[in-house]
Length: 227
Image (tube, rainbow, N blue to C red; front, side):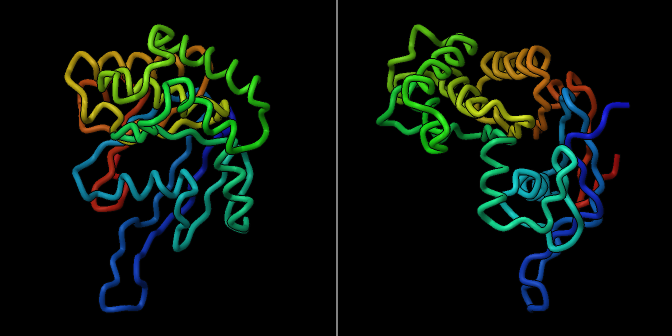
């Protein structure tokens, strides 16, 4: 079996510990994911799926437990180290695209590379063009996001999520705001990226039809993985 690209061991998340408003959201979550897997995370609203994704994406720290990416334990890392690891190893696609409306599709995809300062403008533009072409949007590369359809905007968001060539792409209900055909198109694009680039994808969804097309389904209920 391939070495895990992601390992969670006994992850717990408690908000406001020790206070009257204390809320335990995640309970002893164990999870392993290998390179190239496409995994669906499913469960009812409020079950802790997004909290789990935020912890995996290094946007939030667990209260206890350990999380490793490519064998690197993140528990003792400082905030700057977490930011660097997140920027280079993890990509994000959310339910809402969060594109910058004043920017073109191409400029939106370039942003993570320019913010990182690891890419010269010309190199960032070339990679952004390649990604825009990959998601089938070369014809609207210079259109502002507000001039594109919802499905096109989400494709730009996927291209942006792939800009830094991440090992793991976290997709939090990326088809939730789309019509049926656009949702299928966006899912198929994610599947194609997964198969051709071996990018590991964690895909939160309420859509059972799409979930069944993933390699496996992780069911989360009340902050626990139940299957």
